[in-house]
Each structure stands twice: as C-alpha cells, then as structure tokens.
Image (cartoon, rainbow, N blue to C red; front, side):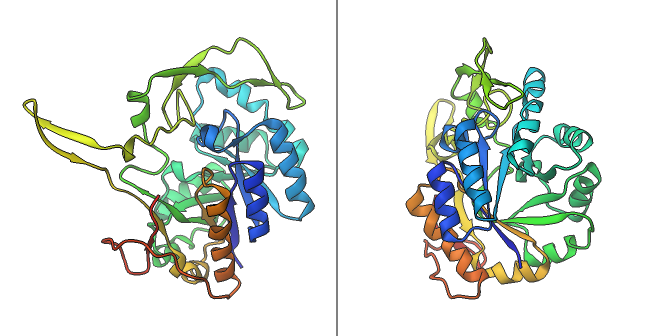
Amino acid sequence: MAILLAPGGSPEAVHAALDAGADAVYVGLKGWSRGGGRGELTWEQLVTCQHRVASTGRELQIAINIIPKRQERAWLFEYIPPLLDLGIRTLIVNDVGILRWLRRQFPAVRLTASIGCGAETVSDVAFFRDLGADAVVLPGTVSPDEIREIRAVQGIAIEVMVHMVEEFVLLGKCWMPSYVHLKPSPLPERAHASGIPEGADRGLRLTGSMKRGGVGACFKICQQPWELFENDRWRDTRLFPSRQISRMAEVRAYVEAGAGILKLQGRSLPIEQLRPLVRRYRDILDGRSATQMVGEPAALPVSWTVIGR
C-alpha cells in the first residue's frame, strides 16, 4: 500500500493532516525551505510536532529544499545532527550538491530528491539514485503508464505529486519574484549543536526568489495580470497558466504502477481546506468512495480534476 504524504505549514496543519489520515507529514524548517512564512516551522514548533507525530507511529519529514549560498551551507549542515537527535530520518532536498554531501556525511538519513530537482524520466530517476537519493518526487503530469516504466529503476522509491499546481515553469524553479520584489531580509540563523538557533549579525539577502537569495518568499507573480505592449501601445492583459490539479481519479492506477508514496502539495493551505483534501485521498487509498472535487472545464485529460488555486 502506498504512503499518503501530506503537507503541514503550521503545527495546527500537522495535527489536521494526521487526524485526516496522513501516513506522514512534511514540513519546512524556518529559513531553509521554500514555503516561506506561509509554510515553515520554528525550531520549537518542529520539536513539538515531531513528538506528536512520533507518538502516533507516523513520520515527520523535513523539507530543506533551497539552494543555499556558500555561507549558508555551513550553517545548514549544523542543523542535521540535532534533527537526527529529534528522530527525524527523512530530508527533502532540492540542491544536488547538498544531496550528495548529506549522503556521504550522514548515511543513515533518508534523502528525497525534491520535485524542484526536475526529475521526470527513467534516466532522471536513475541519476538521482546513483547520486544517493532514497526517493525522488515526480510531478503529477507524469502518467501511471510512465510510472510503470520508471519503476524499472531499482533501489529508489517513487513519489508522485498527485495534487499540485500546474505551472508554466518547472515546478519549484521559478525566479520571477526576485526580479519584481527587491526586499532585503536577514539570512537564516546559525544553529547551536543543540539545535537552538543562535542570534547573530547574519547579513541580508534579497527576498523574492523561490530558491537562491531570498528562499521561501513567493509573491505569486504568476497569478498577477501581465500587460503586453507593442511600441508603447497596450495590446492585451493576460494571466499565465496556473491551475491546481488533482490526479484523484487515478490514485489506484498510480499505486498499481509502483508509486510508493502519494504526495500532496499545499503547505500554505488553510486547515479547512487541508483536512478534507487529505481525507479524500485517504478514503480512495482505503477503498472508500470519495466525493470528487468539481472545477471548471479545462483542456486536460478527463481523469484530471481542476480545482482552482
């Protein structure tokens, strides 16, 4: 049976995901995840959530899915031993170099190559396996038939983001905000060996990039109207494609194809939306009928459900 991996952008969201039937929950550590203020936990919150999740026999995973600068890398690595001491065993990583370094330094850590790594094919998955990843996240645009082919790659678990935003750029690789919102913010804090952050003069970096130099601050630029001018003459106003899609109708097909983990995007979701979302997928995995989410018609396969953002 596949594992249902749900998002948790706050302690309350973690509890809601567990109550709705998630087998595991992933969270962001403040300053080291692209969730930003909408989806990261402080160290104290992380400790509390880990204790709660562990008491239920389920797992809390940590998203460290940024591309840190050189100075930040050393600080980031200081967090790993305290996380291990807490009982955290799975890290979701976006930076290829960091993934390789973590595999060499912490062989007991389970490493997941984030969806931001861009894997979509058999060769991509084999590459991340050879790099040291224990699992790789594939977008929901990869079909069950393609998953069946990819499953031929041995030695790595396959995660599928079955509920996600369909973006016009590679998911997790957007650089647009950094060119529009230039707001300096403090660098992440350095950690003591105990895991408690150390306040210091940390310097500044630009806010507005999903990854490097302002990690975690998404201003949803893609959802704003963009105006087209030609020779200073206004021509049109458009919105970029940005739909949240669900492969709910094909959950069973993904499991049968070999997807071991079904992942839901949405650390910024409010609890009143997160709880029913997790419950719908839990019901389908357990063989119970679930009310399908209804959205506006779209040029997508009939098995996909468009539910807005």
